[in-house]
Image (tube, rainbow, N blue to C red; front, side):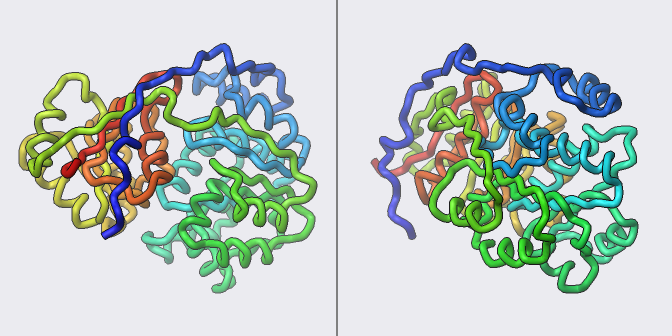
Length: 368
């Protein structure tokens, strides 16, 4: 059992940062994008770029290698998706590889690209573990333009000679810090060795620690570093502890019955524990469900869709399953089980308080 973090770490008042600090220099109309892409952006309500899009798009469209330091939820997917779409429209015989740490993030990237490429002849496929590999082999036979996947499955498909990267001129390494935390350095190294030397590489990470710097140094050419981070992700998050005195489920019930708990993400330490919380809440009549590694991929995707569509208002997850989740209107994060590290805590609470809204993070503490 890991040593508990000091409960004082979990108490901090929200200190919202003013929107005036973000100066946006462009509109999407300023970029030389395909007319249908502009239509798709407009249909999605995307008129003004986010900070990372504003600062990186021009350079990415010009073919520059980029290190983008930005958190989940800052609009980084469109930052690499739009240049990819433009490049593939101009060079339809090329392909693109996007590597993500988790299955959920890979699916979200696929969905975002589909929206931005609506009515255009650009096809993508998701190549992830936990899903039927036979279907993925069928997808690859249709010769998609964009491969989106997790490191292990991508390497497996390449070694089966099913994934052909000879025409891949663009590669995206998304959430590199999380991939390295999850032990994928060997898989990333191998995948990069399969690619042509002449390529554009876009690397995105929440942090630039020595491990991420090493990946950038080895695989990017004269990259432009763009950071839109404002320090910790918790400025808009009111943080506090809840003393449970051994009655965690009872305390959880009392909280979830309050009107202000509109959309709640609950973190548990283990897959078994997460499932147990979910069943207990469902049996008590709460609209809840869980995602964890023991669920099939289609089950996890279905639960996430229901959470995003407000068909359920409570999602219970493990740290690994929650990585890459981008749901903008989460009102509360509840740490039912304390995080193992302060880094895990930061990632957890960063799921709320987004898009200028204030969120709340509560951590259950039994012994203080």
